[in-house]
Image 1 (spheres, rainbow, N blue to C red):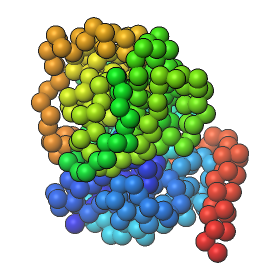
Image 2 (cartoon, one colour):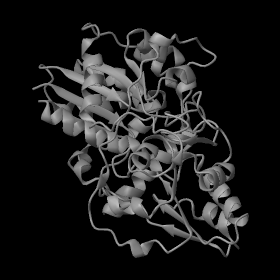
Image 3 (cartoon, rainbow, N blue to C red):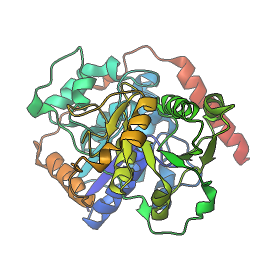
Image 4 (cartoon, one colour):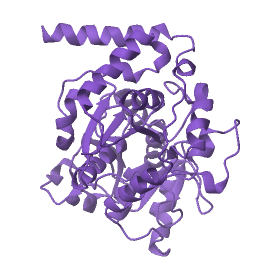
Length: 404
């Protein structure tokens, strides 16, 4: 049986990457593949997407740091663990990586197991803390020339190679990282959402860089509309953003925050209680296809690109139709002018995710059957970031102590 190995960052939380991973793994299994997942955490814990729980044994925290953080002996130990997990690959193996660190591990693992590796970069941005893309543009150039490098948007590879090389339109390889549809007709206690004149909902990971900007925009809109009773619903884990929320909304008597936490599945009934949604990436598509006027949050500018499906068809970056403003102005335009009531809906009809998974798989399988891997010595010659290694080792020690 052909085997398919995902190298990804996390398994336990809910985000676009995890929903995509779940949806594609189900598709592959239905299509006759045996699937495996290695993720950059220590094993142990409960997956918020239950269908991913079966992959929980694949936690290898070392893959969360680039190979240059480890010596050759340690790299061999990691690849041996992965080889033991996957087993015989004589019928064929595809390795798919998702992040800056796991993409660098991908060629090392594929060479060890005799498979083909392609990078499907699920990030929206490629610079900043925790991202090593800029250090290894030669590697990504190598993968790009072999058609083994894909982004989640037609602009992704141009952003990746910005300042390094120009990427022609026909070489901007990308596929929509379509998630499994998280919306289901399941019970929902809508008393969790207080009655209000206007209900605004943020949908997605609050760790996104633009979340504080969204909160600021909602706060400013509420402050300017003291006659309106406003509820700000948050679908996502807020545990790491309580200070942002408190700072933004402290003292606003006409606004109530309703944090609902992570939800999987997302109850269909929820969307009937929302007047305006704010989201980015796949979360924006979820809300838009449920008929909610949805402001797109841009990961690069941290502004609104206007209403998805009306002003813009792009769920990540500003296209030619985008109405780029701060979130306060975007909310005011949506609530007061209601452009969605006069503009046509321009998104294509909603399609099941299997169509996109098959297109992506066909693209990867149709490439040259020869295998060539980036040299290990080029992936491990950089100076080791000992602080990152120490932090990872302390986490592993803490986990071990809790298990005793």
